[in-house]
Structures are given as structure tokens and as C-alpha cells.
Image (cartoon, rainbow over all chains, first blue to last red; front, side, top):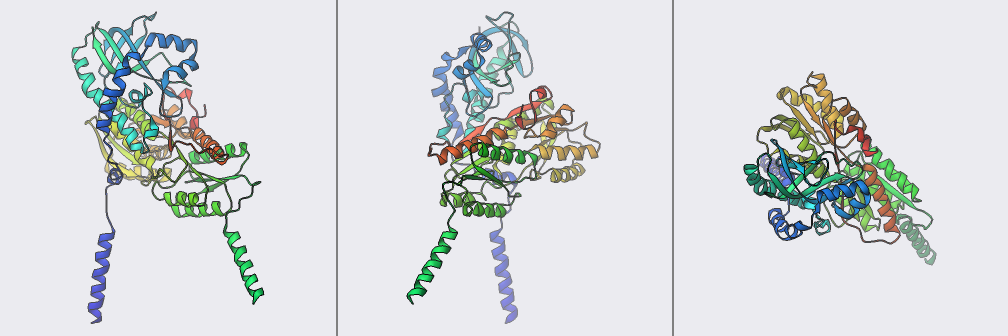
Length: 207
Length: 312
């Protein structure tokens, strides 16, 4: 009788142990925390309904460079935006120029109305980060309490640009073409370097 | 009998008073509870928070949780009972630390998280956090460029229960996973610890001797990984990427031993937490729940612009 009791007890302990332990892969632990927020829908809506109407208001890049050389801090204060606190700030800029070089990951453009011509790097591969999301100052972090959502929106906006804006441009662009662009420019306010400007495109057109 | 009643009431009263947090107007003190002081980065965070609290007129005491949520819980109880008016907090575990913050909130002691997040938006007054995801996106972009979009690599993760671990990993993979010729052959945790990373890397090198790079969730682990690679004679072949902006990694980048790191600004976070706590105690209540602090990419190209912990 005692033997049966021990057997039953052992089975009960094993069953309890089995159901109380769950083995998961490390990244599954993180994925399971994901909320139901739809970043794809939000990003699409943000680009089409919020960002698109203000694109024509982007500051002319040569004008921005001139203002930065005259009064850096005031220009940052007036034209730059960022969700994060710190030195990295983003500008919504537009410009026009001539294609001087086509590389694997970017297209180099000699900017109009700059003397000597300022070369800007139009990114066509590495379109990542918060720059496009933040450049116009339309993204309000107070509407979000989940960091994953905030990051997913930027990632999704960049994915849309990489898949919809870049391929047709890369297909057509040739040396010597004239390009009109509207895009996002990230600059470090404390360590300002305007020698190598990288623009993440939002809208591109060839003339 | 009446005397007995009076004595009992008196004892009860005294014992109840003894259990109450001591709050006298002349006592102004902030507790700084830190996940671990076994890492110079967190020592810097703690010391800056304490310095700012003192500058604002508070007595400041630093508590080391030694990456142990139970010890952290003891520190919270101690801080509440000892009458600290605010807690500047660097959590050990995004989930496990929530109960501790709740305990403080219930006792009327405001908590301000620094650098590490907790998985609740209602218990801490504000969470001032490094933008780990975006910082890792910048490191990952450099990683892809350095490896020319191809090769094999391993990832060494931080503490599995810390949101920064996953924010960094997710930010990194949000870029790197777009390049199918870049293959992750192993992913393992070393708890943000240099010695553990050394052991993990030694073990990984046994199974994966021909990797091209290693991405580490913090600089302490990057240094541990580098040490293992140097010991195996592979330091020149394998690129090491870290995150934090710690002193030894800044030197290692200058010497070409480490390829890049994400520079965090612990001083900004620590000082902001102390200022917020002071403002709260003066009556302000309107604080954003999450405040990201930008992380900057540091490589050999811009190393002269930076010093350890973003001090330059």
C-alpha cells in the first residue's frame, strides 16, 4: 500500500514539475512581450498623412548650411528635431544637384547654390535610424509608453523608403543626372561636422 | 488594568511609529540603488547621481544590488524605512524590479529609473533611458560596412532579464538581418560581465573557430571577448563591437583592438534623474514616463571627439 502511495506521490510531483517548467529560446522570451500595436499601419499613415503634407516646408540645404555657419545653436534650435535627449538632431531638408558618382551604397550629388559645390551623400542602402521619423518634429513620444513601438515605427518607415523610394531611383539614375531630393539629415550639435553630409531620402525625382 | 491598557497602547504606538518611514523636514536624502557596482560604467552612473543629489542639497547613499533582485528588494525596504525621500534607481531586472518600485510607490517614495527600464509604465515617476535600440542600429550599420555585408559572427548578450539586452540585440538585428550573407552562428548570454564573456567567447571559439566578428551587448563583455580572441591568437582576424563607451574600450578603439562602440551618456541620465527627483519633491508632477537619451557611434574615425562615458 505504501509503495502505491509513494508511486502516486512521485507521479504527482513529476506532473507538477512538468507543467511548472517551460523552456523557451532567449529571443522568444523577448518576442512574447511584443504588444498588439501595428507599426506597419502606423508608419504608412505617418508617411502618407503626416509627413507628406509638410515635405514642401523642408529647409533648403544650402540655406541651412549657411545658417549653421552663422549661428549653429540658434539654427539647431529652430530647425532640428529629435525624440531623444542629446546631441543627435535631425533636419528635414531639400535640395537639388548633379550626380557626380554612383556607388554601391550611395549616390554622390554636387549641390546647387553652393560655392565650391558641396557634395552630399544620398543614402540608397543604409537607411536606418530615427532620422526620417524625427526630422519634421511630428512624432510625439508622449503618445507611446512602449519602447518597442517607438522603435518599430522608425524601422518600418525606413523599410518603406528602402523598398518603395530607392529601387526606382537606383534603376534610373545616371552620372550627370539632375536630382531633386527631400530627406532627413542627422547632425551632431556638440560635434558638428558638415564635411560629409548623409541624406536619408524621403522623396526623390530625376530631372 | 487601566495601567496595563495604557502601557500596551504606548508600546503599540511606539512600535507603529518605529515601522513608519522617518520623514522629518530637515532630512533631505536620496537613495541611489544600482544594479551592480562591479562594472565601472555603473559606478560612474552612481557617483554622478550622488554628486548631483548632493549639489541639490540632499544627502546621498549608494546601494549595490549585485545584480540580485532579492538584495535590491532589501535595499528598497531599507531606503523606505530609513526615510529616504526619493530613489534614483538602476534596476537589475525589467520584470523582477517592478515589485520593488511598487513597494516604494506604496510608501510614498518616488522612484526615477536611470538607464535601465522596468516593464511597467505606472510605478516609476519617470524612466530616463539610453536609446539602446537606436545606438545599436548605428553600431550595426558600421558592422555591416566593416564586414562588407558578408561573414559569420557571434552575439554575446547581456542579462536576459534586462530590457537593454533586448533593445540592443533587436536594434542590431533590425539592420544586420537584412544581409543574408551575414550569418550569426551563435548567440549566448554573458550577463554583461567581462569574466563571463571571456569564458563564453573561449567556449564559442572551440565550436566556431572561423568567425569574422563578435557583437557584444556591452563594453565589459567586448573586452572579455577580445581577451579570449587574443588568447586564441585571433584578435587580428575577428572584429569586436561593443556598447557603452567605457574607458578601456575607448583606449581599445584607439589601438585598433575594438572596431566600434555605442557611446552612452550616464552623466546626463544620472543628473537628470536627480533633478527630476528634486523637482518632484518640490511639487512638480508632470513628467514623461520614458525619456530616451541618444547614443552616439564611436569608431576610429571620430575617436578623438570622445572620452570614456561621453565625458568629452
